Length: 388
Ligand SMILES: *Cc1c(COP(=O)(O)O)cnc(C)c1O
Image (cartoon, rainbow, N blue to C red; front, side, top):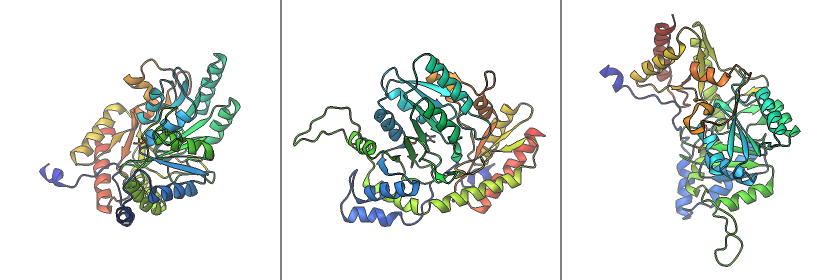
């Protein structure tokens, strides 16, 4: 036991610096651009927009801030409805509450674990009958896997509801040749410390609507009207990214492709080593998509699986290895008690099953081979003990 706790902790998804970060940070210091604007911010925005293949991007303080700005730009107000994937981190939906709007949660479908087009359709039909269509649909790309965008876009276009693509976990993923983040009216990225690339904390809002991003920049900088004094006619936020952090982001973006490749190789290794164990199923990859495999995730099926999942997570934890449950669906959170929920089928909630049976494994791109061995050996032991 003492031996184990002395072993270095293996985290779920720690930061992985490229070595070039200090160059951009030093530039910022040498030119005294220690501010929420400056050359690194401008360049990082242009580089992300180019990478994703969209017209414009605005760098902000977090992914959550980017979602909040998108909702503000779509004029989401008190009492409006916003649809949102249920199987996600709470940050996807919190900004709906900031606006005083009402979230309605949409289940996953089994292939991508993301928003179920058939549940979305039922929700749109129901809200259209009530004459209260949502102001926006927030579609999340879980763990790097992009949702069934063709189906979702065609439904949203039919009802003329704009999409916000929460691509916080899917920077670097591809769907039918197009980059994640480029599918909605707005795309959102996060550079939190645990994401595939990081600025320690930060986010980006992207769009092909140049005017909208211009307005986002205005709102994110305290909404200062053009005047010689401070003049304000709308609610603003202090949401811009610092020029120092944007420097970290620029160096990180240079190695994004490598990071995707490394995470994909790790996923394949886990899959190869563990798939032969009965009941184990790794998250699949939809045809014509490339997932960045931000996290390696699998489900297990068997007797008393919920107990097994907790047993496996705590066995790994005892060996100083961080593993986690799949996101607890938002329609199950006390915060959203009473909010409407549309399951995949009337009596079949896919997200509830994924939460119950799923485990996220350490997936860092800087995990050493012997650390991978440690995780795999410990997992095999725990799985054997619990399933068989
Ligand atoms: C991380 C994350 C966010 C929030 O990003 P922050 O930069 O931490 O605010 C939003 N949605 C999803 C799905 C995330 O994983």
